[in-house]
Image (tube, rainbow, N blue to C red; front, side, top):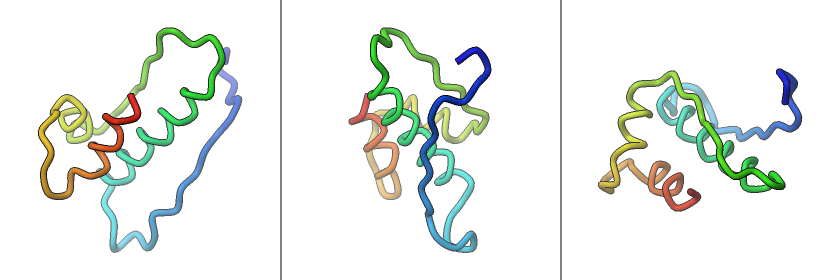
Length: 77
C-alpha cells in the first residue's frame, strides 16, 4: 500500500531449463489472486501484467493442453 509491499508469496517452479517465462507469469497471477483473496475489505482490484502471451491467455476461457495454470487462475477469480 502506498508503494510499500505488505505481503509476498513465492513458489519455486524448478530448474529454469524446464520452465518458461510464460509459466512464471501464470504462477505469479495465481499467487496474486491468493494474496488478494486474503485481503480484508477489497472490493475492486487491479492485476498488472507485462507478458502479452499471459494477457491473451487470461482473456481466453478455452481450455487446452498446457492451459492448466490459466484454468486454475480462472477458477480462483
